Length: 571
Image (cartoon, helix red, strand yellow):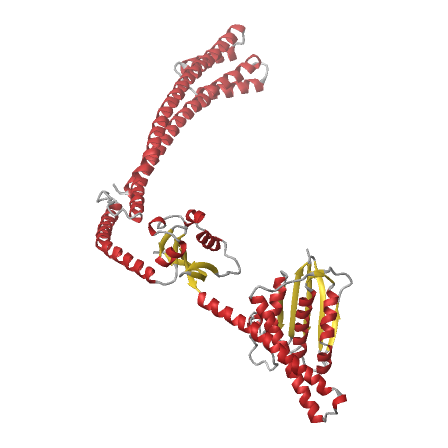
């Protein structure tokens, strides 16, 4: 049976029961109303007429108005003859009243009074009889209404419990079948009546399940072959690689990863990486970095290929779009270990070379500076203008070479981890004074005016004053070089809560926001910059500041100058 037919029958039966119960109730109510109306209109009126006649009976001969009242009620009673023997009794009352009008005596008066009482008794008896009938009708009404109501409630409850179930049952069966197909149970079949709404759905569903079953059987061998092919590709990768699902279970791992982890394939596939890491330090570190990635990922030092090797861990999230959906969903991660031993060795060789060449260059540069100082001594002779110009050029280039070698030495200290800090309590104003004195000659040469901004109260710093002073000097020197003649430069300090800021601000050409991060990279110079430099100053400055757990940032716009800010947490 179709759902539409079931709904029609169910609602129709309920409607019919409501109509039946309403009609029965209205019928009995109307019957009771009619019987009550009869009592009121017939018997009650006769009682009122008789009562009015009794009230004026003794005064009909002495009062004209009493006579008229009596005659009026008598005439009304003559028109309201509804009971058996009421007409004879009323006629007798009329006859006796005529006698009373002709001869007023106690005997005639008593006859009239007796007739009135007889009429009243007839109506009272009728009222009692009709009341009994109405009571019986009311009892019958209650009985029938109760029986009908009970029958309706029984059928309504039967419909309530069976009707929704009969409608929901095929829907639940269809939903269950769909869930079985979604869980790859392609043997599931649906059996609905061909005449129901789900008949065609059942036929289509069964055809779909049969085709899916055939497709699975036909493609299973292809899937196995493809799986082996993918495993062969993964194993052919020379870099260690590990695949995990969202539950951190190892789905695949190549031979290179098994070698460096010192594990066997049969002991790791489909096993929890978190549990395996309890007995494997390297795997534990890889899982920890995957769950809680750090800002700086240091290379992993692993013994591989019979030597200490360095690997850089890369964590690649795997996301796909599920069938029937539009959004990407994460299904796991791949850990790829890139062997950077060769680059690490080259980097170490580069650092060693820089350190060696820097030390070797400082000696001849110092000798050149000493020779220039002796050459400029007027006791050995006076230099002409051309010689002085040449001497000054040699001096400027020698100082530049000396600064570059100094910066290179600082770079090698940072890279080799030999940077040693000797912190002490220092006032920020002392660092600012040092930077101003160190760049005074340069500022006078370019005609720059240095302004100092310093609050009345500011916390002291616990830093390596020599290195922080070098950073401020480098920032102030850069500001002078990149400012126009006779421009102003601001160097200052301020405190916001527990943070002390040191800043250098110029009003030169500014830095394009695209390069705000790159300017702190080694050897980087903003394209189009004409000022000579090694490209190491800001990189070394950032390393020095971060070694103190501080930050060095830039705020700059093209055409509005630049502001470099150093921040230290004082608590």
